[in-house]
Length: 175
Ligand code: IMP
Ligand code: MG
Image (cartoon, rainbow, N blue to C red; front, side, top):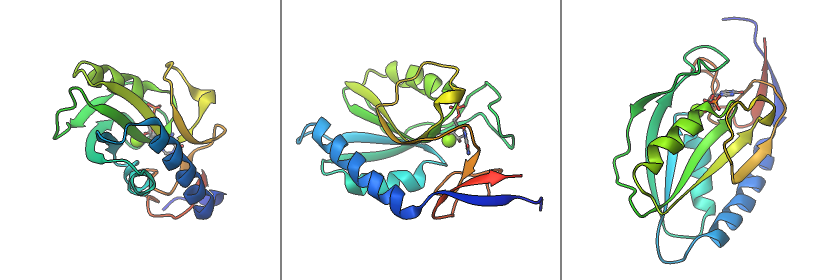
C-alpha cells in the first residue's frame, strides 16, 4: 500500500444534519401523491442515497444506474460508459438523480442526456458534494450537500481505486 494520509473533512454528524435539511427541502418541492424516482449512480452514491431516502417524507422509488469514467485515476478520462441500465421506465416520472460528487460535470451531463430521451416529467440532481472549481460542463445541481474546494476526498461512499468507501466521515486523501 502507498503512504496515503486521511484528514477528516466533513464529520459524520455534519453529514447527517445536512441530509435532514435536504430531505425537508426535497419533501417540500415534490407532490404528496406521486412517487419521486431516486436514481443512484453506482457505486459512490449508495450510502448517501440510503440516508437521503429516509429523510424524504414523500412516496419514493429507488433504482440504480452504472456509469464509469474514472477507473483507477483521480481525474476524469472525459469518456463516460453506461455499465448498468435502470430496471424501471421513467416516462412521466419525477426523477431525482443522486450522486456522490460533481466534479467536471461530464458524468452528469451524459446522464441528463440519456434520461431526457426517456421523457420523464422532471429531472433534478441531488449531490452530496460539489467541486465547482473543476466544472467543465454546465450542469445545474439543485440539491447540494456541501460545496468543497478542489481536494480529492474519500469516505461515505466515495472511493479511491475502490478503497475507503466505508469511512463514516468524508476525508481528504493526501498522498
Ligand atoms: P465528473 O464526471 O468529473 O463530474 O466526475 C464525477 C465522478 O468522479 C464522481 O461520481 C466520482 O465517482 C468521481 N470523483 C470526482 N471527484 C472525486 C473525489 O474527490 N473523490 C472520489 N471520487 C471523485
Ligand atoms: Mg460516482
